[in-house]
Length: 121
Image (cartoon, rainbow, N blue to C red):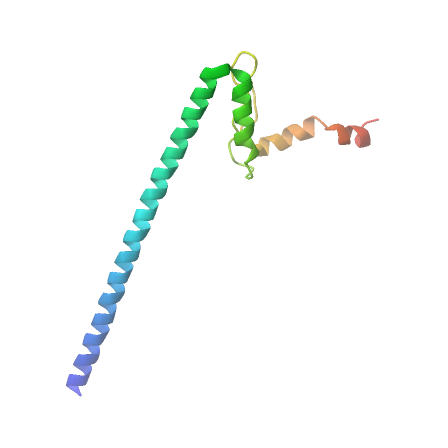
């Protein structure tokens, strides 16, 4: 019986060691993926800033506004930061909504043409 219990304990220890090795491999893989994703995110942010700087140097506010509209078009979350639009002086428009959620407040203040037809006298 003692030999049998010793064998069972050894088998359990081997299984646990194999499990730990597998967990270590998976953790290493996740770390590699996180490092890769962080590097990619850094590159994306750097590219966006370079793009903005280059656009600002080329032609002023119309190109900046074009770039801002392109970036803002893909926003889906109400707390996502918006790229500001620029005035004719190439400066960001004062009090431009910070997030897409803030746009909803503006819509309530300035009715669109449909609201004009249905809600205004």
